Image (tube, rainbow, N blue to C red; front, side, top):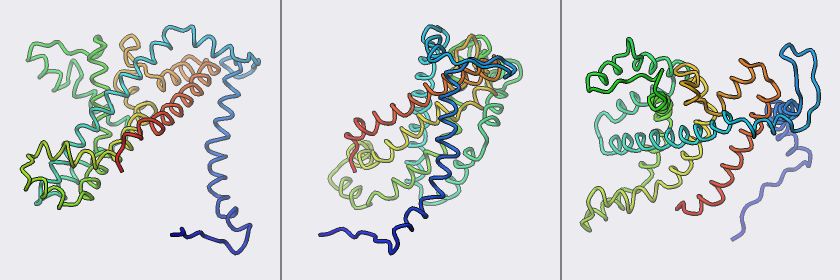
Length: 294
């Protein structure tokens, strides 16, 4: 069976159709990336009056900076925790909605609402709830005997930012899982139930394997989200503290560039972060995707 092939009557027409998207890619992606790579090899004064070309000196300094090297571990813990929590909670909620026939649309609407909240606003909301002085959740935790204080304890600070980031992303994951569950034929579930398979066994042997493409896609999206789109949450809740315990890579780019006015180092960090995300995505699609069942 031969596949159909689209043939354009004019040779120039395909390039004209691609031109708008290529222009957007060059202007808003490739050009800024090139400017950042060039800035990473410069040393500039804070006022922008003088700059000197230093080759890879900014990268060498980063390799010798213990604070920057420590932010790699912090980012890995934060990204992995956020992805696991947000995907796990979203899957549980999606399974609950899939089993609910009545009022499923109401549940879906209520769960999707948090996705419309800006990251900075989400960070402020969770900061208020866990504030050691006025936070209602911090008060309830102290009533159990645990002295919650994310301003002093690094573990508490990491838990706070993971909860805030996961809460913001659960809605996004939930929509994809609901769509994936609805695409699974009901006949497969009924056949397994007739054969005596319980709900848990049906989930592990039928539902979850068929959801593997969705889960894999969400894994990639959530890791990229945790490494890039959580700046507002970090800034609104902990500002990278205490003692750099929540100072992830994307926040350190801001801290060194806009607060410390070390533009060369900040640009070098941006390049390294971009390379990490590209390499991570390639590894995921090249090796992890082999275990995904389509």
